[in-house]
Amino acid sequence: MTMLSTTVSPGFWAATGMIAAVVLSSTTGEVLTASAMKSIGDLDEIRAQSGLKGAIRAVVTCPRFYAGVVFLNENVDRRRWTAAALVCIGVYFLAH
Image (cartoon, rainbow, N blue to C red; front, side, top):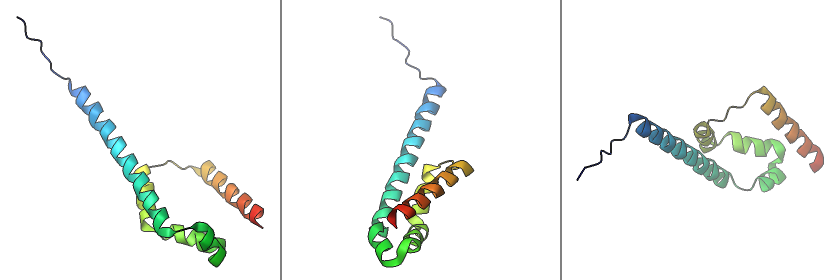
């Protein structure tokens, strides 16, 4: 009877560890971002009370939001920031 050798290459463990790290950091980022949004509250109500600047201030002053963004590690270049700003401007004009 011949015993089969079941050695696992170091590359397998490196890939497994990398996948686990990506899944863990992504999930942590999503949970932190969701937690931040829950702690901030309904942005429509904040906007109705404090205006658009108040809603923006509520998001940018929440530490959990930044912690979530850091784990998500999004690469946001100038083009994406410009697009986000144009969307915000469009939403502002539609609201008024």
